[in-house]
Length: 163
Ligand code: PNS
Figure 1 (cartoon, rainbow, N blue to C red):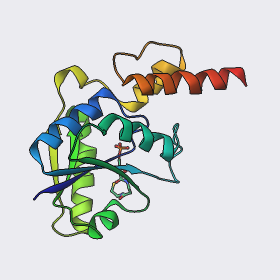
Figure 2: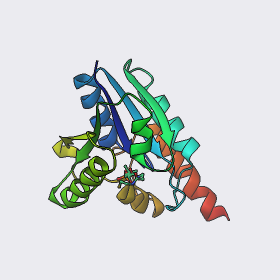
Figure 3: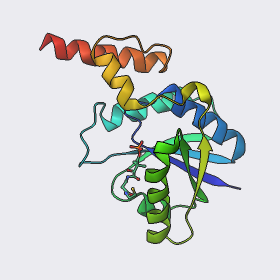
């Protein structure tokens, strides 16, 4: 029984993240998507909102659950029976950061492996930051994020304009 954790900010979850979730869930027995609640990083969507999106979007995938964590990822992992971490790799530019993260995580918690899934080409340019940037100017991101996220972005940006 192989249980893996897919950690991230998911602020918000994109079609690229969901692609990784679906592909990882097809490889491993259990996949826990864990949303980082980092007080040092100002998030656009609250931890509750980010979790709620992911829960709704993965409810039909039997072996996927959603959780959140604060503090160090390795502390979350150490308290549970986790076989590996899963991360998506979009481009060479991701590699340096991901490599560093994987190494610090094994340093902090011996034996924790990171498995990288290479992004599907159609999502290779996607990031939560670019989605927020485009959506903030009223650009159409409806083909790049799930419809509930698209609606959530529109609602939040509309509320900002109204202020
Ligand atoms: O989606 P992101 O922002 O690329 O995810 C990064 C994340 C949340 C996985 C990473 O920053 C993280 O694990 N943060 C928790 C704090 C921690 O453990 N830091 C040490 C490893 S970078």
